[in-house]
Structures are given as C-alpha cells and as structure tokens.
Length: 232
Image (cartoon, rainbow, N blue to C red):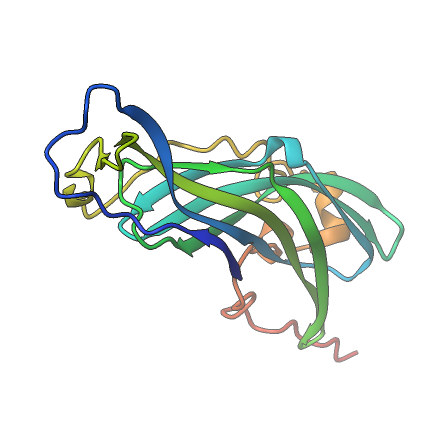
C-alpha cells in the first residue's frame, strides 16, 4: 500500500548550459510513504504458544532502481519463541524476507533513494490447524509489516535566472542488464533449517524431523502414505 506525499515533475529547459554562478542542488523526483510486508510460512506440530521478537536494528535491504519504479528487497531478523503442547520451550532465530515495488514516475537508474528509519507497524502470527490422516499439524504464517518514507532525488544545475538542467541528461537512457544482482544481504543466523538437533526438533516438528518442516510449501507430506492403523 503506497501513499503519495509528494511528486515533483522533472523536465530540463532546452538550454545547453547554465551561467557560471549556478548551483548544483538535489531535486526531488518523488517522495512516498510505503509499507513493506515480510512473510514466512512453516509447518509445525501443534503448539501451545508462539511469540515473535523483531530486531529492527538488524534489518538488511537493497534498493534497485529501474525506470519509474523503486524496488526494495530485504530480510527482517526475528527471534521466534515456541512452546509446545508439552510445555517444551525453544527460541529460534530466523530471517523473514520481503520485497516491495513502489511506483515513482520519472525516477531512473543513477538517481538516489533515501529512506526514513524503518518502523515496525504490526506483527501478525496466524496459526492454522490441519489434519492429514492421523497426523495433526499447525501451519504458522508470520507476517511483519514495516513502514517508511522513501525519497528519490537527482542532482541538477539551477541558477537565479531560472536555468534548470539535469547534471546527467542521459541518465534515463541507461540500458540495464536483463538480470540484476544486488549485493548479498546479511540476514543473520537461522535455526529452522540449519540448527535443529534431535533433542529439540521432536516437540515442534514430530518424528519426521526436518522433513515435517518445509517453509513456504503447502504440499507437506504430499507424497507420503498415511500411517497404517493398528489392527490389534
């Protein structure tokens, strides 16, 4: 959900240069209040309680600019506290990814995007109980909503007599590669797929171990036959 707070149209005057007493200033292309939504979905054994702590100071993200659009891709480090139905407690670090595309008419590669400090607006934990044969599982959807204001600017030359020229008049003609690879993000430690041991996995993901914990998949146990009932 994007809310436009300011949008400045950019057009350079048809002049080759400005007077020598001109100044270089940052001109605002667009400024918008935006929400970013991070989401993670996992399957666990039934739980008594789930809590999430968001580490705002460790949020990592990249900003990619294409013509008329600003793209944010990042990860929000959290600590997930789980209490099983048998009152077994465990705290697990995890990184929840997010991405957001913001329409910003006039922005081009090479422009500068700045953000106000990110603020956590809401943390949502949705638990859904499932039965697959005799197996009872809980699907847990973690959603973190953060809010900020992004502002896109570019340097322009401006003089007192009204001369207004883009420092780089060809910036919007830059052809980006078909595949863009931003720098690697440091998402922090994770436990769901890398740090479970035989001692702490069973209360949360059952006897199937890590096979019962499949992030962002709905087809859990799809290819497994339900356990045979005891005929005695």
